[in-house]
Amino acid sequence: MMNQVDVAIGKDTDRLTPVTFHNNNDQLSDYERNAPQITPITAPAIIRELKDLPANTLFIIDPMHNVMLYYPTHNDKEAMIKEGKNVLADLRKLLKLSRIG
Image (tube, rainbow, N blue to C red; front, side):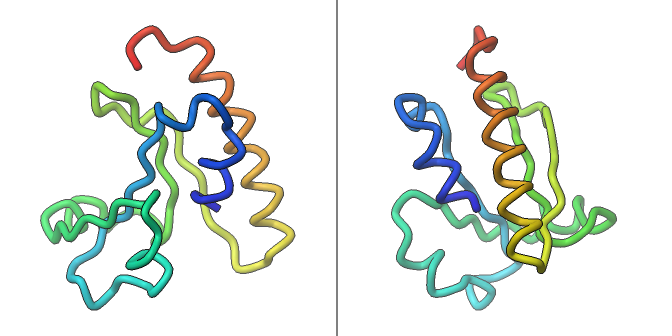
């Protein structure tokens, strides 16, 4: 979903940086290893801080490091597509109104 939203955002794509967090490099998927638009970060300390949140949650974080929005992920493809449309709509609004990045 992150890749699709990054592409769909169009001219504002340079204002987004998709990032994934992992405990170790063994958790990286083949897609993450080969996707130049996604920055994988191995950060056990961050993972420990986020342990109470559901796994595979998508966060929208502003340049000041504030979590603006978060979205669950779904196993159902149709539900994930619908969630992706919500993410895209919200991101477009945030980027239009943003004065910091």
